[in-house]
Image (cartoon, helix red, strand yellow):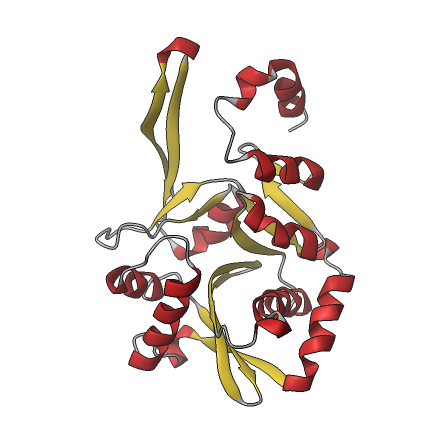
Length: 256
């Protein structure tokens, strides 16, 4: 892998010179290390030929500490009347370019994604060479959801989820995420990565699962109270955390 930085925002008045941090994947075997360093796959430029990853505040479940929560059990109990099931399909046995599947994913993205996603970008995502499996979910033998996953050694990235919005009383999205995490734990994986964690809308991940850590820019941090504070203040946050409380920041850095 190659880690590189791209010059970003500048505020000379406070001597703040930001650099966005990226990683270029050179081999599939690097994936566990790439995720462990806090990187996630970049998909915003469908013309990009190389696999590039970006550094962000992300969330993972350490499966050695994962336990079913009362919320997990509540969701599972409620949906049981719909005869829920899922299968884990190697990418070689699933046609990601099949028209009905692409339409299904596109419809969900139009309804739920905060930013519009073009068909070109969607197909770029679905054809990412690191994708290894598709989790296919059914209710009463009808396909209602899919999770695009990257699995390598002990690492699973729950990358994109697409599901029917006709079953919202059953918390289908929550059940799918819980099912994947539980499957990973039962299959002796080490970590499940759940993507970025910014803003209050992402806090459902923090409330629902045990064994969580977030990447704080330097390490995987178990302080969920701090993460909740960060998410709640994301919209109003301006500046540099280091400069806002230098002593506290350095104290935390020394513990790494």
